[in-house]
Length: 411
Image 1 (cartoon, rainbow, N blue to C red):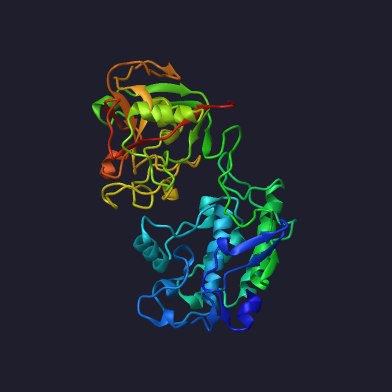
Image 2 (cartoon, rainbow, N blue to C red):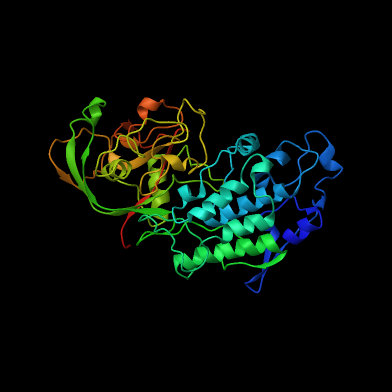
């Protein structure tokens, strides 16, 4: 792109889908159909007309600017690198309007927050590329490339990722070399139209498994905790000591193909869907332990009060969101939406607690109510505590009710 910019050509629709990889290594930028000298075209001069693909558009494109320069492409390149390193684009709202608002506000989670193994210099280079004001971005593709190349030599260590959940670019090579390869690929992309990429290809990476858990699941180490709350509702009492064995749990709620959580599903249907994937519904004790941890957190993220960047609840949007939209509210193991969005079926019958210590408690056989857990989009902040529990008929369905799956380790 540096060669194109040197000739005054602005692409205006850079995205991973416009990169083709030949022979597994040689990659080329395609589709200059929206490009123009100086970044202006007749269609782009009409009020409200936007040129490009929304998820990769710069703020000035979103606003329908009559003319954009090379710094608009630098924004799009920042989005692409972010996607390579995290597996998702930085700006992706519930609808186009929500996405546009996020873009013009520059509102997104840092790459290193989604993937702690992203080196600091790459995170900083992306953040500069995604500065809302064009003047604050890298002044040229060369400057962007230089920022990416800093500390990219193999001898520069990559900070270790916290175990067990890591979102990374799949590669058979060690993690350190993987990020070096991504940085080198990005430098090459910025410098010329034909470039050599890492073997991650042109598609965004998928989350990878940790330990013996499959993709999309996180390992929850076994341990003991005080289940329930003496400060909560009557069905949260008495507090009792519970020990659970290690298990795997879905990082997000079970989602449809569009990324929205599956709702209006009965307990039996949720159980069957989990079993169709070789999984099961989590026990109530597993669910609460995953949300609270051995220390007995009040909320999945800790003891800090709920905010709209941590959970989706009534004071925020009052509607369901795509799964995994609020990484700031994740547990230390990376589980998302454990408080807010949709409430979740668990395996157990809805019964009172025993005061005696228990080891892997579970009661699935009953004809009464079933437990569901987690605050929801229709509930206020007071109902997001991780110890809150509810009972509902097994055949009931609701727009506020979904589920996530679990499974034992090593299966």
